[in-house]
Image (tube, rainbow, N blue to C red; front, side, top):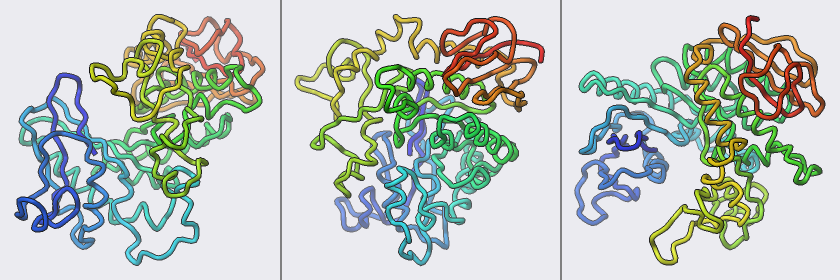
Length: 416
């Protein structure tokens, strides 16, 4: 859990205070310094490692009472808190054995109903939201709570973003959707109905630190180096950026990084591998440090320290995806994301609101945003008629007027 800030600004840290317990989870009387004061931090870091042990000891009859906000010396104009595992603060009260104890590891997701999404969690987020608003009343700084929420349905997800709970919660269903027009339409329709219907913003993501990257996920084993996975990933990016709501981009997504699938066993850090010895569901492949520049590891990721190297090895082919190369190539993923984000910020059609589905041929998904912004994606491999006339405003690949090639997305401005 951490407060996130814009570059050059201060930040606030959200701290879970458990009377009598320190950061390690041990009773404060047992540690150096003794005392029974709240958990304190010398620096602003990622608190995720502290959250689980602390909350395991939480008295279920008094959820949220020990939560407070601690301000660091440097104040911020805006503050945003990302809350990891926001649906996992409580277990089933009787801690029964699961019928499927390997479900989480198998799906690389939080799906065990005995370990996640217990009803008590909502009272915690109500209290935290109230605290955020209390502080905003005092100093005028708005705090935004963004939760990592993985639950079975959009309707259950919507409970976390009610007006008195989290401001936003990552909606992960597109990560699990196969590359299929009907599957994407179903996910989007359910989110717009059940989440946007609460008055909240749907928070879209295509990649995260737990799932195979889209370039690899959307590829087909038989296609080898055909580039099909990359083309589909580019198309999916334009689709996401055209949807109503918030769009979050996972590090490396804007570079078109593929999953690193051949990391040797002795460098793997994923606890799933440590527990099971199986590589089947490991997540390290999407967590390899980014390539920034140069032709060899560490690709600018670390410098200035003799012998310093990233915690996971970067493959040599990362040179092709390095940021300096992406910036110089106007056909790169980086430029596609930049252009899409600039249009998303400047076009009124791409603000909050709704969408209207268009009738399309099989394998094509198309919708209208606002006053005539059309987004279409061809999930097939054969070209299809474009749903709008003229040259696209932006496309994920070559897209001549009147045609929408396979594995391609495009935006048009038209009166429809």
